[in-house]
Image (cartoon, rainbow, N blue to C red):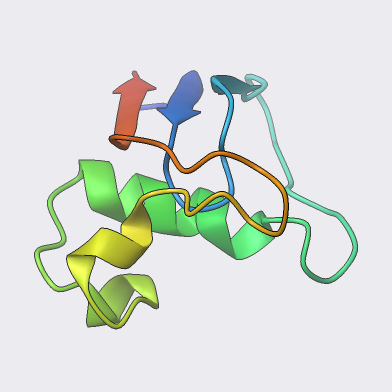
Length: 85
């Protein structure tokens, strides 16, 4: 059985800084308040596995998948996501 060990994201949607999400052996859950990026974790998984449509990743266009800087931040120049199985 294939198991995801971790997801690494930088510049993808709300992941401005390099972020590593490490998943446990038995069960992992993604929890948090509204607007904290839970759906972006699933979108990053779909992105790296080859979803071609920006709309399927909840974005109007592909450029919206790159971190835009928010209110006071600096926009990212690129987005990168990797999965370790």
